[in-house]
Image: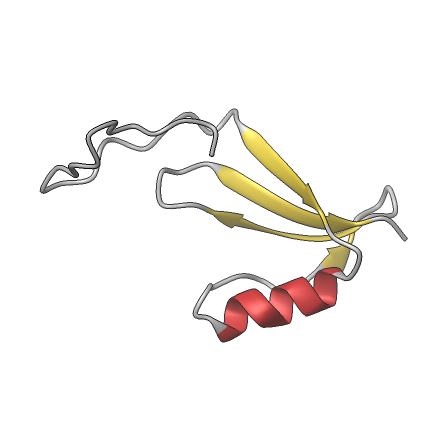
Length: 75
């Protein structure tokens, strides 16, 4: 957990405005295909993993607050 927006665990009726698109969280995976299958099997919507021009196999999603989360595997 990086931080909780609501320390008292009370959530507002409406979600807050989306956060900056300038923040990206990278998560290293030993098997990005397996991570993709596990997460999409639980309902996550994401494009299939691809190999980037710089060699990492990855896929990305946006979390509910608008942050980008990238799951990547060194190949």
